Image: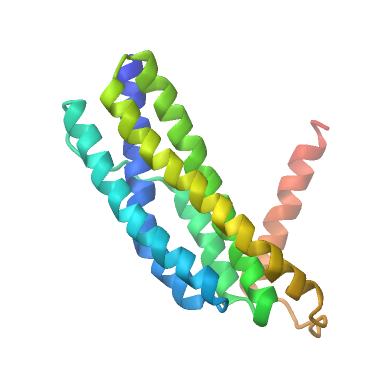
Length: 190
């Protein structure tokens, strides 16, 4: 497979990821309790819409149709965000869970853009590199903003009393079972 084909596959993955986030970010914004965190998600939603448009331009420059190849990785990261929204936590502890999911999302995107930029650079696609670098800068800025907002939220969370332990939900039991299976599979190689 030629490098251009690999890049196109990666771009399709990023296009899918960004489109999934256009749907997920409003839910995080609605669920966040901290006003600063809520606004950060709302602001990043607008940036994400712009990133989708830039990716469409990238496809045009590459002579390809702007279509996504469903990004399973982003689907999983978004599912973690949805799980955080379903937790029984309250106050700053609730927002702390959302922050963790949001940072995983941003770092997933950062890694994707860094890979695409390296490939486009190797192909001499300067305009593509420039557009992708704009998206990367926004993702890095969003991650930094969330990290900065996290500091006082996590401090408040640390001062909140521990909640009474409740029985695990079916989803939590399934997740614990899968985690145990992962641990057992990895143990052979450790």
